[in-house]
Amino acid sequence: MANITAQMVKELRELTSAGMLDCKKALTATDGDMEAAVTWLREKGIAKAVKKEGAIAAEGLCSYNILNNKCVMFELNSQTDFVAQNSKFIDLLNQVGNILVQSDAENTEDALKVVSNGKTLETIILEASGVIGEKLSLRRVSVLNKADDELFGAYKHMGGRIVTVVVLKGGNEEVAKDVAMHVAALSPKYVSKDDIPADEIAKEREVILAAALNENAASNKPKPENIIAERIVPGRLDKNLKEICLLSQMFVKNTDQTVEAYVNSVKGTVQTFVRLEVGEGIEKQVSDFAAEVEAQSAAYK
Image (cartoon, rainbow, N blue to C red; front, side, top):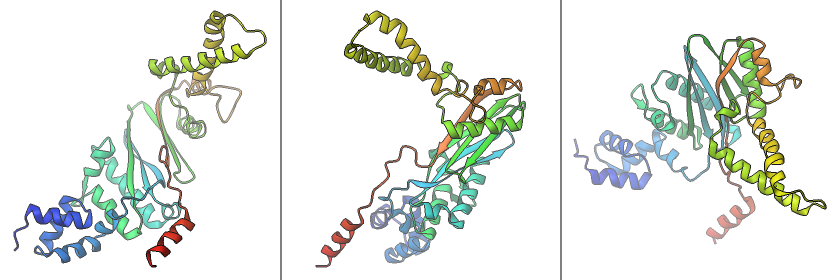
């Protein structure tokens, strides 16, 4: 058995971009044969997957798994929407959910370290990347816990393009799911105004004040600045804050009442919610096909 040195592991890592642990496993399995180790990593799908590291995985699906009083929500990304509909991707999505809900992981970093059947979740996803042929990545993991007298309301839109989970105290399952559907549709940021950070409120007030003063300056009959600050700005601020809060939004299934009124009608209280949408915040790569063809043609001249 060859002695696997740190230098050998480093060299294989530089050749393949695979992880240190995977490189050591490959060298051990091939008795230190560098070329065979590269092949071993490719056969496992690991080297092929990490070579796609520069690609942007902005498609995919979100999902959730519930076990007793615990709910795990996560986003699994692919490079194309086509692959996200692939049965192998769906199988991986379900596998990831089952692994996470039975683990103690509460964030993405810890989730990737979870071991199932001798492999980390990170390795499982990398191997699936090699099989499927696209870069896949676990992007976000959120955990919600509820008390025995609380309910989970969960909703998936378009098979998982958007996933929402609400924790409701009191009420019933139908109301909990209705509220989750509302969250998917109107995308509130907070449950109520009490949850909005003071610095965010202050920033919003500054923006509204500046806009109101500019409008006033351009008006034919400008008002005194203290009137703007003391009367107009508070009203606009209150309106804007209500629009981003779940309870004060008009209920999507009955716009004659707020979400708060709907939930109160069954003596319920919204405790919290989480909303995940595929690709939020990812700057998607725009491919210029003509430029790619020209570049490839030039390479062969």
